[in-house]
Amino acid sequence: MKKRLRRAGQKWRAVSLNVCSECGSATPSHIACPSCGFYKGRQVITVKEL
Image (tube, rainbow, N blue to C red):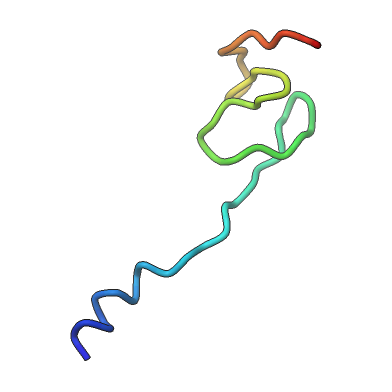
């Protein structure tokens, strides 16, 4: 029983996606947007277009 109680918090959870405020694409939390390079309203990386 104790073993199952310890492992109760290790279940798989789906990644929650946020909407980018600049381009509107879905991005994971706490990560810069891969399509435009913005994070929290400022550009942190430059993205080259193909």
